[in-house]
Image (cartoon, rainbow, N blue to C red):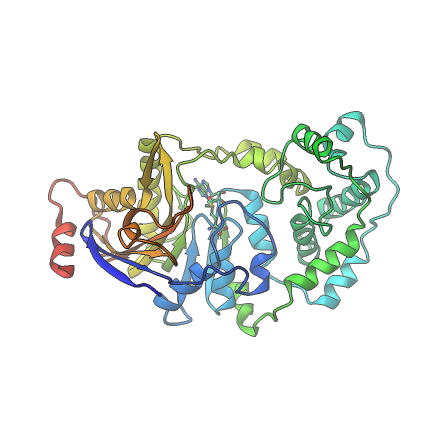
Length: 410
Ligand SMILES: C[S@@+](CC[C@H](N)C(=O)[O-])C[C@H]1O[C@@H](n2cnc3c(N)ncnc32)[C@H](O)[C@@H]1O
């Protein structure tokens, strides 16, 4: 294992194998659902172990996604706060607040009228869904969806629907669809082209047996007793730039990964999931910012950081995972951009360190700017920020925190 420390940009940088690059080493529930740009559960696990010393502490993720931080916090016995603008993310994370045991789950599943007769889908529906599903599979999906729409508050049914959501489209026989992409929903046209190219067509998939099998896979690892702390979690669907429902100095540790400077279209990429969960209208009404311009992203992050700093307790930490991105044909290190933004704008926090998780590199010099030899690979670059005063002081001219840092680390 290689461990390097360097004073860089007036905060220390550590390059190390902080957590393993091996796949699927943590609790089986983490691997239940694919989610674009999610981080490995080892990442929150590492920082929770490092910074959360006492089980009364509260852990939050303001860009929670599939809820990796929230799940890991609960598995370790900590209360957690979820926030994400997306109602799909809200559904995913909230559905795991209470996990039914297998008997309860089976009992409720067997009450769902999967085979109930329905009238033929209309032409538009056929065009939209038949590239993915066999007509009989689609009928079962529709029956499950209808049951959910009429019983949205039933937590056991919600969990069944969550498992069905994880099986909606993907590339193995365990999914309800013909061979498709698991992480995002492609358009019906793209799926049709894919079917022609691969010479495949949707075959009948019994959805009930697949849901049961998936429950068993996800629960291969036992749920720790202290997971019950999840009852005390809080769930929000706020814009990260205005977390007005969360009080000042309330959270002990934030572990998060904001949207990068990129082109993710949350609505388009999630159309099938949004339809299945009856969230199409809500998804379409939300304005997810797509930040292609660096200055716009910085403005968005400045407002989000102001909120994160407001809600974090004195001496609490904010761990922000960002990667390197291609911007105007150049590699841009967003951790540098964020550190600069913080040091220029907020004097009640310090940039404590940058942790770069890495395993192999051929030259030591690669550690600082290029993490390995693979082209375009994102690295885990985690900036650790510590709050040193409770009051929010926006800086004007004198850069006190820089002086503080230089004294502290050199
Ligand atoms: C990089 S993903 C986070 C993935 C997460 N770390 C995980 O492991 O699943 C970024 C998330 O930010 C959410 N998001 C985008 N803009 C947002 C905003 N303005 N406020 C709150 N959440 C936002 C997206 O819905 C997405 O789930």
